[in-house]
Length: 344
Image (cartoon, rainbow, N blue to C red):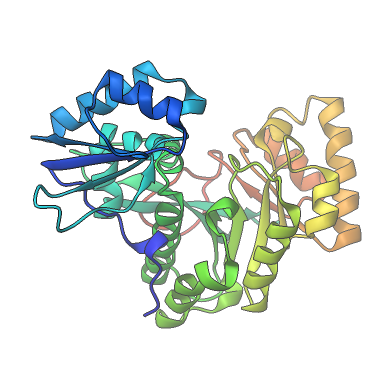
């Protein structure tokens, strides 16, 4: 199985040893030396620490003393006292984030998470056509909110690791619970995929290893992801689609998922944001926006999915408007196992 160091390894930080900080800015080195260190080295400063608490205290002093711009100019590495082994070099913000959140590191390193499934419905007949896979914790000693875990992963340089692990976990769980023909909507972070041909290889190999039909997989850009490199995202879309998989754009109608973005990316599915769906049966402005989306989707061959349906009136209105798919608490909450049918 192909592996990638950014996606499959979290280097250990020794519980005792030495901390080396490197900076190319002489003024910062001098200030850091005055604050903590004694060193004659031109660019690097080294200090020993006895345990994780003392290492955290050193980094806390640095964080409190320097501003954000200065902290970005420091790079850290740790090693054993004998100096034989040194960890990967990280920016100071990444290094400090990992020290501050050992529980989150434990969650990521040992995959202490699973995916719950929320049903996606064909509105015409209330049949289940697929499920969205949503991360949830598995160990009560290591609770987390997914958005906080992903925020920490981004700050600590582990976003690619977590995003890949979450994708693969969702694929494996879907193979255990769903039959062929049922769609599996799986989130991903475009910024974690620096080279689609390289970063997505483990995803494609997992699909093949579990004998899944690629056409059943729908990968969607998550709602928190700012779309600022459209050409890069197009490349990611092509990589998935060349494998026979489908693509979805989230948050349509708000934020970065605009009409122009739909026209540029032409996803297979467009998920209408819950803020547009909420009380759409009573709001003429939202109804005008939905009419525009429906017209555009038909012109471009995009399948619309209404997210966040919580009321019968919203489901009925979306159905009457001709939106084919729906999702929300009205139909079902995320659960460990798929449900047999929708009771509404």
